[in-house]
Length: 358
Image (cartoon, rainbow, N blue to C red):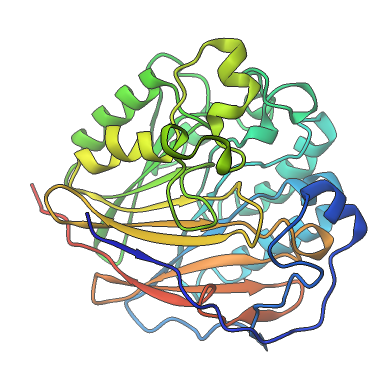
């Protein structure tokens, strides 16, 4: 098994401070009092993509925006819509924790922001732990997600593939198909701590679309030390593992963490090229590349900005898929600060393994 992890983030000492409210909410963070200690902040947007490229925009953990800073959430989606042509934005991926406390007001704020993209850019969403149960405490699998984003609205889109076969009218588990610049992709979105039968369904979807490069989005997959969540190996040494939430204990669900999803889903198929997750605090960043049994590299990426000031300062992750069909260049940009972060943990390139055509 080959593994390449994030290394040696260079410190630039950008001056900023985390609010006392956020420190209390998030707990300690490796960034200490300065959430931008490892940043290389540069004014202006990332360079425009070269001809033949397309972009996938990533929205991790908007929970604080839905609760306290809806104007920031709106700024993110408005920037995406305004830049859809210049950056050839193919889709938007939301990595979960859409809300903080799973309240009606927070869902209304999320709907207002995401609906900016309706008819502009297709978006695909998964729930995070904060999107479950009263107060967002994730003690069961009740969620207001389906009250505010219906399967019906997604069925109208040409990108819609389907939902978990045993819950056809729920959005927690869904898949989507998009094509850009002559390349075909499958986005498989799974619930927080996917149940064993959901993983069964996901395997069927991945196999059915084996000629498409597959991207898995789920809220918890890799940790901030660039290892996968692994309850059996690490237990509580890795904070916030799905196995350690009340939903696993109260429901009896056979939940899956990152290592289980790797072994029981991702590594079993030769079309996965990338996984994306949020959820994890500390610096909220991580990446690891692991080879499948057949020797194909799969990149696994953590990105979460909720610990930044003002609930995240509006940071987006932009994945630029370049014309060579294998290079993906990552940029982090905040349309609120109008800055990009050029630290090695925030701006880097990945090489995607080719997918065999059927």
